[in-house]
Amino acid sequence: QKEVEQDPGPLSVPEGAIVSLNCTYSNSAFQYFMWYRQYSRKGPELLMYTYSSGNKEDGRFTAQVDKSSKYISLFIRDSQPSDSATYLCAMRNNNDMRFGAGTRLTVKP
Amino acid sequence: DAGVTQSPTHLIKTRGQQVTLRCSPKSGHDTVSWYQQALGQGPQFIFQYYEEEERQRGNFPDRFSGHQFPNYSSELNVNALLLGDSALYLCASSPNRGRVGEQYFGPGTRLTVT
Image (cartoon, rainbow over all chains, first blue to last red):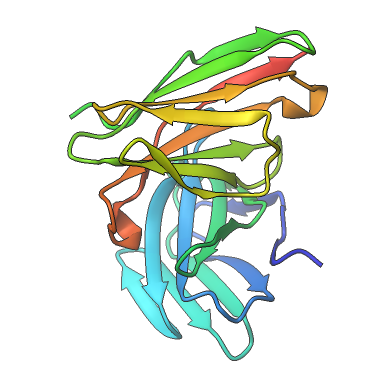
């Protein structure tokens, strides 16, 4: 079992849809939970990060962490074609950082 | 601010050869980390450099080595290249002891081993 599991997709939605992206993990020592966006042929760009369980909202993006279930989510509201990218979850404790495999999202106009 | 820059953009090498990749960190950052991202996978941590020393290392063989210079720029060297080393190599910089949100990635170097 991988430490971080993420459905690779691909996921295709119409413009304006609500997108839900998820990851599960097995290492309870992870303290920080991040979501990165990676456009084709580019490096990952940090979208959001959270510490501990709960929700965090930033514009159209909401990150959710449930440490008891070892489950994190990223919601994108009113999705736009410019949101088309690969979304990577990542988790970190003091000395260890692990990424999910990424979910490829396409938002169709 | 140019952000994190990496060179070259693309590279093609033959099995058994050696390669050097280069990274310049974002202005004000003194810590550099290297990651390997295979096609369809997330980045995997190779190692981190701070004060010109390797501070932390992931699960990669000794064929992977690095260096950090006094100006904080860094090199990743891979010896005896294998086909499986084909990947996007990402450099990320951050301030020392920086917060989670303070790590920035470069665009990567795509290495193809034939």
